[in-house]
Image (tube, rainbow, N blue to C red; front, side, top):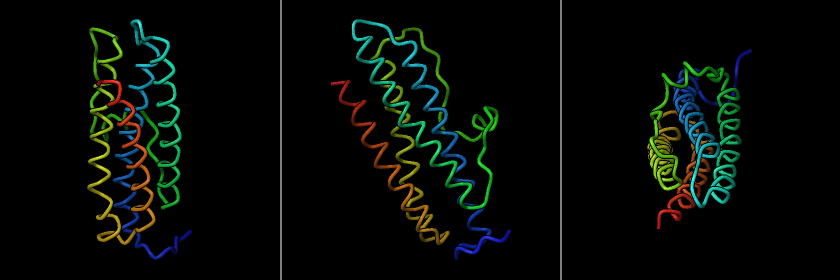
Length: 157
C-alpha cells in the first residue's frame, strides 16, 4: 500500500536508515546497561542495581518507540544482533572490574555519543528530508538521553 504523508519514498527510506542506526545504538546501550545492572559489584551494589534497572527500562521504551517510528515510515525495523552490531556507532566493552564508577563512565560516554548523533539529525530530518515529525521525535529522544546522562554524570562527582 502506498504511504501518502507528504514525505517522498526516498526521504522516508533515508530517515528509516538513520533511525535503524539509532535503534542499533539504543539496543547496544540497553544491553550494556543490563550488563551493569546484572554485574555491578561494590559497597553501592543495591543502589546501583536499582539505578541501572531504571535506566534500562527507559531504554526499552525508547527502543520500542524508535522501531515503531521506522514502521510508521513504511519500513521494517532491524531486529537481529548481527544487524545491530553492523549498524551501531557504539562499541561493546569488556571489563576487568565491575565497579559502578566504571560502568557509569562507560554508559555516560555512550549516551553522549547518542546525543551528538541525534543533534546532528534534528535539522537534517526537517530540512533535507522534509520530515518534521521524525525531527520532533528525535528531539524528544535527545532530551531523554540528556536527562539520563545527567543522572549518570551525577554519580561521578
